[in-house]
Length: 362
Image (cartoon, rainbow, N blue to C red; front, side, top):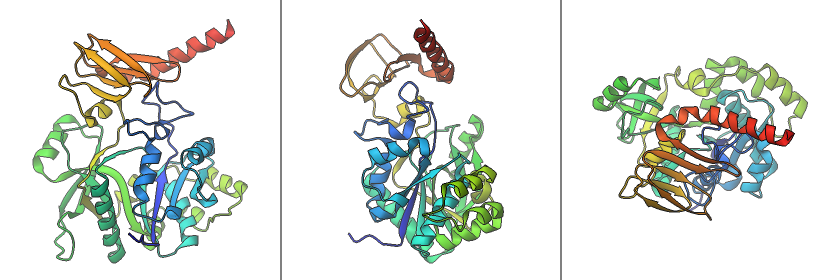
C-alpha cells in the first residue's frame, strides 16, 4: 500500500510516570517498557502501528533530553528532526505546537495524528482502518477528530466524551459531534454514562489538518501559538530553552479540545486501554481459569486467583496461595502487593530508595 505523504504522526513520549514501579522509574518510564508482554516496548508498539499509516520519515517523537538516547536506541535510524527534545515539560499543548511547527516546515498540507506513546491498542487492522478513516474526515472537513472507545465498565480513572449524532449525510455513522468532555467521574456518574449510551472513553488520540491545528492554537492558546509557531528543525537550543522557560503549562485537552466547537469523535473498532495502573493492566490482559493475568514471565500458579504477574521474560516462577495480588519484578526489586493497595506504591518506592542509600553509606 502506498502511504499518503501528507500523513504525519506526533508521538508524545515525555512522560516520567512511575506508577508501574518497580518495572518503571524516572529514568526508564512506562513508554520504554514491554508492559503488556508483546515483545516490544510501548513506544516501539506505537511507532510500529503508525508505520502502516504514515511514511516512516513522517513520524515524529517528542521527548525530553533525558530520554532521547532511549528513543533512538529503541527506534533506530531516525532522522535528526524525528526526535524533538523539550528542554522542560510543559504538558501537551507546547509539545504539540513545537512538533506542528517543525512539520509545517516540511509539509504545510499535513494531516496530523497526535498520540500518546504508552497506550495499549488491541486490533492492528482495525486501528489502521479507523485512523485512515479519521484522516479522511479531517482531509475533507475543518474538524478536530478524536478517537473514543466504547466503555466496557464504569471506570472512574478514564475521561469520557459525550456525543450526539452528527446529522451529516456524507460521513461515517461512527462519527459523532462532541457535546462535552468529563474527566474521571465518580462511580455513580460513570454508571449513568454507560447506561445512557451517549458516552465513549477518551482515547487521547487527536487528528487534524495542520491549518486547523494552527487556527485552533491561535484562537484558544494565542500565547503558545505566538511563541512556538515559527520554530523549525534547526532552532538553536538556547532559543528553544528560552521559549520553554516562558511557555504556559497546559494540556491540549483543556486548552483547545474542550473549548473548540468543531470537535467530532469517531467510535473506535479496536480495543484500547491507557494502562495507567496495575489494575488497568490486569483488566486489559487475558486471564486463566482462575482469573490470573500473566503479563510476562514463565509462571506456574497453584491455589492462586485474580493476580497480575509481570516478571522478567526469561525468568521462571512458582506462585502459590495468593489472591488479588500484584507480583512484579524490576531490575533489583520484587514487589508483592495487594491489588487494592497500589496507591501505596510511591511510598514503597521511596522506602526502597532510602534502604538503598543507607546500604551505600554502610
